[in-house]
Length: 321
Image 1 (cartoon, rainbow, N blue to C red):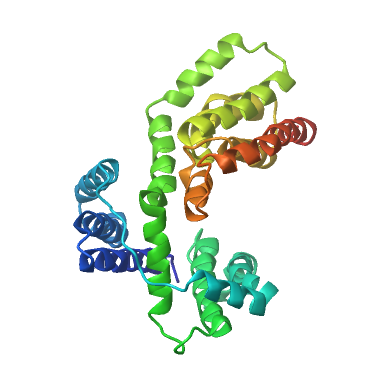
Image 2 (cartoon, rainbow, N blue to C red):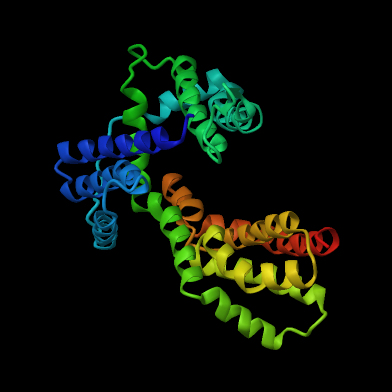
C-alpha cells in the first residue's frame, strides 16, 4: 500500500531547504526555526511507528514557538522577477495562469474518488484514509511541473526555481505557516482537557429542553465564536461537538451526523472570516499584497460572514433532522 508519509517527508525537506537559504544569508534564527520544523516532519514518522520517543518533538515545538514569539526569524530577500516581468507574463498567459492551481484539486479529486478504489491482489493501492492527502501531494507536484513548462522562465527550465520561489513565499509568510497545525492541536487539547464537557454542562443548564431551533443556533454560533477565539474551525469542532453537536443534536434530536457536522464546520468557517487569529487566511494575504490596512480582508469579509452564518443555521435546521 502507498501511504502519505512521503508527503510529510517532502514537506520536511522543503522546510530544510528554507533553513539552508536562511543560514546562507546569516539569518540564524530563521534557519533554526525552519530546520526544526523540517526535522519534525521527518522525525514524526518514527514516532508514529513507535520506533522513536515523542519527547524531542515536544522540545522542538517549544523552541519553534519561542523563536517565532521573540521575532528571531528575520527576513531574507530572495531574488525574483520584477513587477514589469510579472505584468508581461500575466498579459501573455492570461487565463492559463489558473491551470496549475486548478490541477491540485482536480488530481486530489481523482485520487479521492477513483484511485482510492483501486486494489492490487485484493489489497487497496492507497492506505486507508490517505487518498485525498496523497492526491493533494501528487497534485502539487503535477501543478509544479505544468507551471514550469507553462511559464518557461528566462534562462530555461531550472529545477531549483520552484524551490527558490517556494522558499521566498514561505519566508514571506513566516511563522504563520504553522498556525493551522498548532490551532488544530489546541482543539484536541481542549477536548481532552474536558472543555467540551464543561461547555456542554453550561449549555444544558440554560438550554430549554425540546427546543431544536435554539440548540442549532447555539451549536452554529458556538462554532463561529470558538473559531474566532482559536482561529481555526478544526480547533473549535471537537469542543462544540462534544458539548452540543453529539449529545444534543444527534443523540437527543436524532440529527443526521453527516449534515449536522458538515454544516457545523461551515458555521465555524464563518468565524474564520472574522478573526485575525486565522492569520494564514486574513493577515498573511494583507502582508503579501502589501495592503495599507492590515485588517482589510477581515473588514471586507464581515458582510459575507454574518448572512452566511444565518444561512448555515437555516440549512442545518431544515435539512439535518
